[in-house]
Length: 371
Image (cartoon, rainbow, N blue to C red; front, side, top):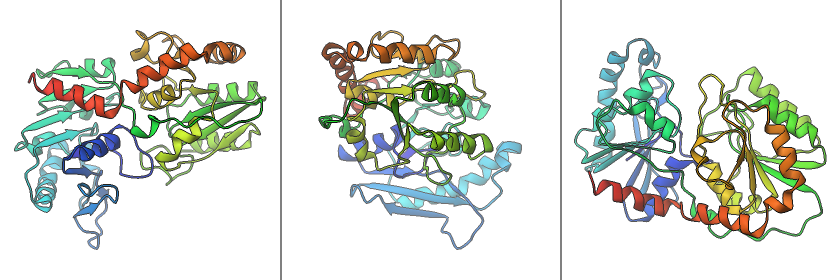
């Protein structure tokens, strides 16, 4: 069972890819969506649905029939009230669950509710800012994360902790050859544009300062378009409107994941722009980096500490803030042919191809042998 804080949908991040790869390797996989918060009795408490992708991959949908806010005001009562739902999920599956692999940093489905599993893995990929994010590792046999700074938050648990970088989906292994195009420079940006920790001011400054460059965006840019969350506040909507108004911006929205490799192959480089000092900063590592690296093209980014030991993979700012990102971007673009040389492109691609989800699962299996 893969417990995910994001629903199954058109956009895919690490937990979706691990579920797919585990099913491909012959496992029967149940992907547990976050619960529907509704008291509507017409909606079944638990549904086990075929994924439509693989015969042995199922999507588990459920709902809670009590006020969700209890979780924040009376957590002990919340988990007591969640027990019948967890039992109903197990009953609906109607077979033993050997491994529970939780990415649930919100600790909605506490691992202690799956004590009968042979192995319980907790795998946070976002920075925990609330106590519930730390508590989510309770009862885990193994803690994995895509960032060492996240792992440091779980020092209090006497279980093995290991860094496992993001993986690369098979779709990116055979990168299409770029089509012939004019002399325009195209810079790609992929990810949920509704995220609160995007450095919107700096990103807009870069775009406005480079009117000759075409900036193409893939990812949710409207409420209800994303299955991986995101804000719908006034600031987020205003930001999207500002992007739409710029003549050198193309917003493609959320597209099927399988279409991304072809889209990325047209790019001359990529941009990542998050505010590392934002309240409740989600980072500090991003699955999109592997996808960008698989193209071989240069990446200009805000600070990503887990790549400090890999010079040449990402051109990034210092850890303090993003004030230097516009200048860094201009410097890289002015020497684009140098940054996209055959040697540098191959170095980036080799790194990405060594981190497929197949290889990441092999590495994790190696860690399990030492438990």
